[in-house]
Image 1 (cartoon, rainbow, N blue to C red):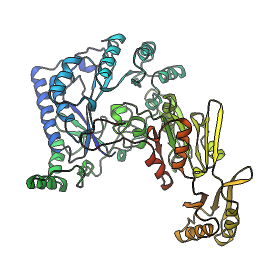
Image 2: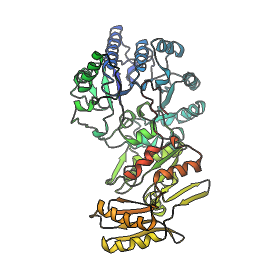
Image 3: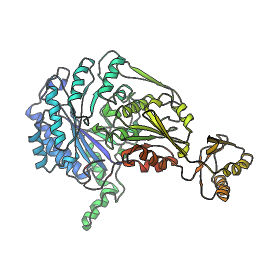
Length: 550
């Protein structure tokens, strides 16, 4: 991620709710224990203000065991951090029991910026009613605060959760966590009911294998300064105070202090930032899978950013109007091994074989599709081959960009719209002699006898060299001018019309759909994808003082 995220757990283990299933409502904290939590939070806020910028931290979320937002000091601390010009978002998990006007008054008096505030609110049916909870959500939204709300997916509560969904504004995301301790698989009917409430519920049932190298974008900080990479990871050797001290002593910290001594304005981004990952070069993870959202949702993966923005742990969906996805290497990992994915309750939803779309990716596609995004391929393969490679996912897709942009397809409402960029008829005559010269085969994609893509295909063990590519391109230009584009993908030398590429395909499809590229998202892993990825919507950061994301 461009900026890191800190999750503060603190030592607070008390709650004003008394849910039967929760251990943190059984023993209220004493005044002494509350005082300790307050002092720990105050110390953390001070060190965060002093060192967070050098550690390139962009967001903070309070994720307590108990309920933090009934205590004024948390509102004050969140306000102070939100006022920092380099911070993009602050937030907290909450049961929503705080008084709205009083709490936001404290937040405002302390200088808080509401546009940066993100709330993750959990519905507890034993302690509040649907109408009370939904009304609190409306109050929060009406005051310009972003939020998501959710509950545990208890099968016996599905009807109640369906009623809650109806009471909430359509724009408010209602997430469901998998029920731990269910001791049986969810039934197909229960899964479908949960998906009607939460489009992304399958992600709860397909936890990805743990991968510690994906955990670079966040840190969990305990009240006593202990650190974890995620909420279910083991304690690390370093402590919060230690990495703050190292940030102070880093080249970035020294440069900042020197600038201040000289009276110069300090510009964010003008130095090599301290990377918190440096303090633990070889951390271990003893978990088999990332089994909760705070673990898998915070992994440094493009899929998380696509679904839930630059700081996915706030769990507020991005909801792009269209998504463009490269096929080989993106939807289908190049070396995906067979893997059976089970949830803690025993569900086995899919088996990902080599060369197939993994179950965790299919879960994300299901969520995007149910959430109303147009899913579109963006692949070097021709239409028929692309569809054949993605049989399990085809029902989610509405066409896309094929043959490196030479063929564009949109299918919706029972109608099919297409555009081809055909090659000049002389291209094949120019390419034919190269079959013998380079020991390759000439393959073509055609429509109605006209060629829209040509490929010089050779042994997989003999990739194309720059000199060879330049020779082919020079011969083509001698005949066709600058009307063709030639590039290598491994052992394939691709030739398409000069106007054909994935970025231009995005523009065509956006025009057909009546949307702007800024309202879309794209993922790809090759140079051919770079223009498309750059064109499609990302967060617009305006630098210091940025109050949110688009």
